[in-house]
Image (tube, rainbow, N blue to C red; front, side, top):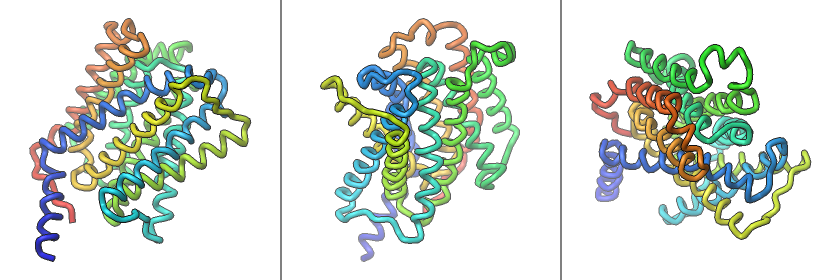
Length: 326
């Protein structure tokens, strides 16, 4: 009994040891960064047009139902038992699913049908800044400091730049509700889900939270898409590998990120999220032939500002001794 307790304590300490935290967080960012190219490629493989909202929702539903099954199966194999949520956690899982899967990815999939992968990756990084505002104003998980406020200002200036500045927002063309506006909404839901995971994982296994909320959210999205006339046809032999990979992106990244949030302050993990937009831009340039936009002066400067904002926002947390999980 004592040996098992020591092993559990060692695992807890390992998860809040910064080298391990950093490596795991960067791996998550690589996966998330590949999401935009993978989804846009999926639209071509499944022949889903920009105005086919129902089929986009079905694709999102298939991805997250699959991600949920993957998460539950892998987590159960690793733990040596079937992972089931507590009865009192069902409501929490459904609420988390509304933010993390249904809300966030309804808008995320809409946005990527109406904007580039580069712009989407940079704009989606605003979730890091919304997360701090949520944690401070609504959930009381953080305290606002001058450094965090400065980080938000720097980061949001990068978002504003990629949107074309105030002129781009008011003149039309550079900003659309279906594209850039939808991505901002996706970031808004992401911010809420990050705080909810931090709170709910105090009483529930984060793998259980991630797996079952993905499954619930995926089923809801699939049903909505099907009832509104969507279709998902496997036109190419590459459709299945693409769908499996998209499921793995979510199953791997969100589960690991949830574990990191359980053992670390929100800001300490969020600072490493600066790699997320970097990987998104780089992979969009590589796989979507968006190098011209990615390496334009505006694109580079916006990415630098967003990344710098994330680092400034959370830099002070790196000097604090992480709290041990209870």
